[in-house]
Length: 89
View 1 (cartoon, one colour):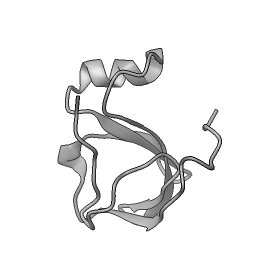
View 2 (cartoon, helix red, strand yellow):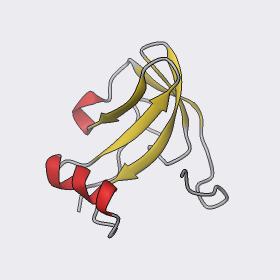
View 3 (tube, one colour):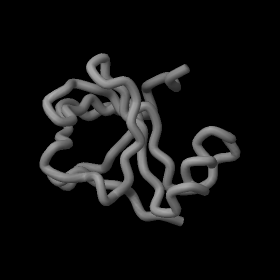
């Protein structure tokens, strides 16, 4: 199992977080740190054993980031409460 992913600020990366990545506003679609049974997210864990997360933004589309990609170019803008948010479809 991969440990929780964290922004440079120390906050945990969670589905639904609003972020800024290289100046573009985006949203965390999903985080994968362990197998979920979902073929799409489990594929990312198979390809990137360190886990990671998908963000999407109008300016650049979707990008999957691994722990090594977390740097000063990624910042959390607004945290979400994932227990209250419906899954992204």
